Image 1 (cartoon, rainbow, N blue to C red):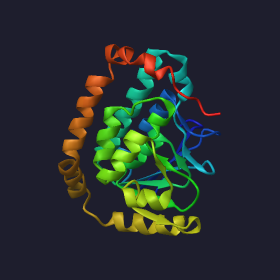
Image 2: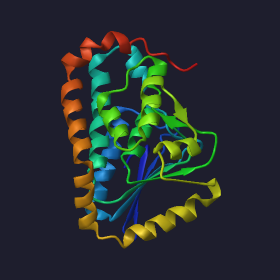
Image 3: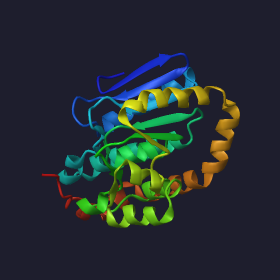
Length: 246
């Protein structure tokens, strides 16, 4: 693995840790490295843990500088890489635990939404789909992913209003499954792993596919329809108006 993504396998558990030294921006390269780690985990592990080593941040999401630069090809490559990775996690045959201990801006949120169990630490950090607040309409693949996990009223608020939520609200919305004190994360994580060790893995994979197939089909259709150069260039003018953070 690169310096941005580390991989550790121990007792059948693959731990994929994000740490680019900054805010874990989901560039095309970073997304590829995460994907490579999951490819390895599929053949070696029975359970996967996805988390960040950066204090206070899971991921700052897609690289907004790429959007703001107005290069449709580079923007398309990045978003398509993120979409394909989220879809890959949705169909991953082994249980995935996503750990949120800091801010998760959209692509980071998408990855957590695609995990089987989302564990969050209490704190002043937020997650959600804030695209409309910065001048971007959320891609349909992300809306379909969120639709499969969120309660309808919260889905509407985050997609159309760009609302972001701290852990307790994120739990109520369906972004997270469990929220504990920061000091309880490690103990809770080990408890979850112990529970996942005893489930029948082939049945898990089949049940996941049966449950998620409609959402995955909708995501696949959205990727193939929207994430093409022709479609991307048609809406490029709107994306160049991205409001960069101060």
